[in-house]
Image 1 (cartoon, rainbow, N blue to C red):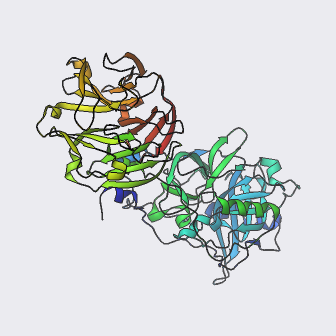
Image 2 (cartoon, rainbow, N blue to C red):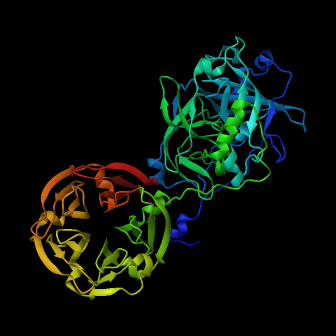
Image 3 (cartoon, rainbow, N blue to C red):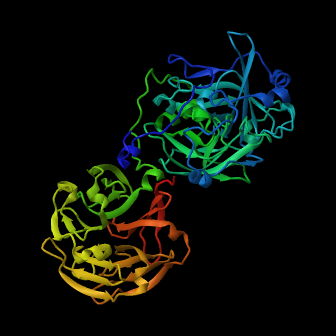
Amino acid sequence: MPTSPTSRRRISRLVVSAAGTALLLSSGTSLAHAAEPHWSDADAVRFWTPERMASATDPARPAQPAGPPSPARPTAAAAAAMPTAQHTPGLRSVGTIFSFTTDPTTDRMRAHKCSASVVESPGHDLILTAGHCDGGKAVFVPMYTSAYPLDKQPFGFYRISRWYADNRYVHGTKKPVSDLDFAFGRLEPSESGAQAQDVVGANKLVRTPGYLNKVTMVGYPSSHNPKDQAVRCPAQTEALPGFYQIQAKCRGMWGGVSGGPWFSAVDWSKGTGTIIGNVGGYNGGGNDADVDWLTYSPMYGDWFFRLYEEAKSDHPTSHGTSYQQPPLPYSMGDGETWSHARLLASGEYTGDGKGDLIVVWTDGEVTLYTGDGNGGFTGERRLAAPNGTWKNVKSLTGGDFSGGTGSDLLAVFGSGEVRLFPDVGTKGLAGGTGLAGSGSVWKNAAQITAGGFGTGGYVTDLLVRWSDGEVTDYTGVGDKGFGTEHRLQKPNATWKGATLLAAGQFTGGDRWDTLVRWSDGRVSQFQDTGPGGLGDQHTMSSAGSVWSQDSVMTAGGYDPDGRPDDLVVRRSDGETGMYAHTGATFGTESMLVAPQ
């Protein structure tokens, strides 16, 4: 198996087991279908005794006994940092589905249990769950409480009279049609005549914004749950490669949580919130090889909202016989991969006026991420395969040194060699111009960063922090040499503790500013750095702060204004984010890569 970062980013490490038993819909069935007729609230109460309710299981995430760790389990460090689902009394708008249907092969009654949530509808009578949870004679119990029988539940129970599911979905599948694992159920009024939404409220459904989201998952595990209570877990989502789905890591998401909502916002006092996903999708939403910590959700796009509208209007329409995935949002990969990002360099490498990012990985691979001009990226391109040469690069920076249409890359190698690679977005990394040879004084250069430090409108100046703490500014650097050197700091112990440098136009002056992350975690900003000095120093973060986890950083112009004041940071756990419009304080943070 390839081991390069690019290969790792393109491999979905999913260990799967056989899908659980489920009711199947053929590709030709109607979108909506009625629940089994000839039963009443009284029938439900008689059948769903407390014992049967306690023994119900999820059809696609079957309960499995705890066993030895599977090969898919995370490392000890990653597991320790992973959130764990916590018991909660629940939300009044979220509950369980109990259903039973006749098994034609044995003529016995078969039960399963899933989670569901009440969602906004004109009739005040719709729930959302997973597609693999529909079918059969079913009841929805909001804020299910195991201490009470069905007819004594705090918010009652509601029979499901009609199901709405995409006819192309196949239960338990590991194929792209698992993107369609969502369904709606229409509820009958309670015995008192009340509609569910009027009793418990309703949740708002919105499009899944993208792959990276902060969510709170809520559901009712039917195994490994002695308290038989709801659980909730705050989690970070990321892409499920190759699928129009997201995934989240949280221990304790056992069978029974299928269909449970993923909230982007929730008001626990009101019992409702905004939903952007539900447990479902690949392999029925998880439980691969008895793994309780990796859970999936379909993304809510056009097909989801088409089904939602059809359910609200009770106007089912067949969605055809085949499913073609929509264009998948671009994903930069995961935290495990990005923990190997060793060096970053910002610039307009493609010459389109939008900020791009070059990454040097620990194995020597070099990739170029193309910016979209809105604080994100649209794709990646390999500039160099894993190799020994780029493994030996000590520091690098982007700049306008050669006068071409795109940014150039200046690299300092451990041997003391310095090479300038002009217009790398179009010319690549072949050759380059040597500015210093192996064994030169540049073997003592610890860090470099380019900027406009007072010599004009182009990024042609170079700030260097030497291993003995000396700091120098080279103005007018080009393909003919390093220009003019200016000493800004004599060798000193303080600057020996500077671990990271980044330059940008943070405070709006003609000269760029310099950010320094010190070994104790402090971050300082030196405003208006130039040939005459580093500028005024301001503290942005104190010692021991979260910035002690900052492993690599660079600054560039990644949003529409093009101003180089957007700070990109890779932390020790692989999480990579952008602080847009950084000034005297850090700007607005957005996540580019979720932590491992």
